[in-house]
Length: 208
Image (cartoon, rainbow, N blue to C red; front, side, top):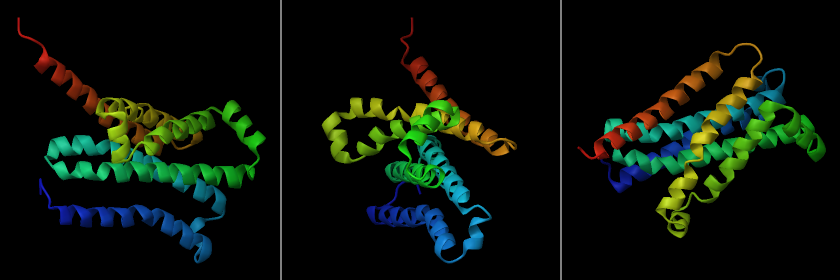
């Protein structure tokens, strides 16, 4: 299981691609076939659902490296780009839903929201920071930027993750159970990285 053939990895990628589309497929079925799936306020349901999935895919993407190192499944790193792009995809759909349903493409109202409402501010900032990551996700961009610069740029995800969780936390008005769960998951994923950096620094430290 630690190593998979190219054919097996291709099959996993196809399955992941289809599974990751399932939330969008469900929303489309709700819009066109089963409106009862979207509840009493379909616009709000679509906006919140796409935001939830954007955050989930972001956390799943962050989980790839710890899972690879702890399990030895080297091949799982090949899924990270697709997962990251799906996080970006659902963020874009989430933002498009907000723009169209909440403000009917009124640019002035949107800008006022971004400036005056903190949870909208941090959510919009998360989207802006994700743009360069999505734009440089190809192998060609890795070669063009160089591995070191590319890795430095993509460390923005460590800023985007907390901003996304904060956006969700501030948006929720009553039950904070879900935001707390996401915050704890993010803390574990980032804490693992801090612990690994600290361990590597200790190993690399010269003995006196």
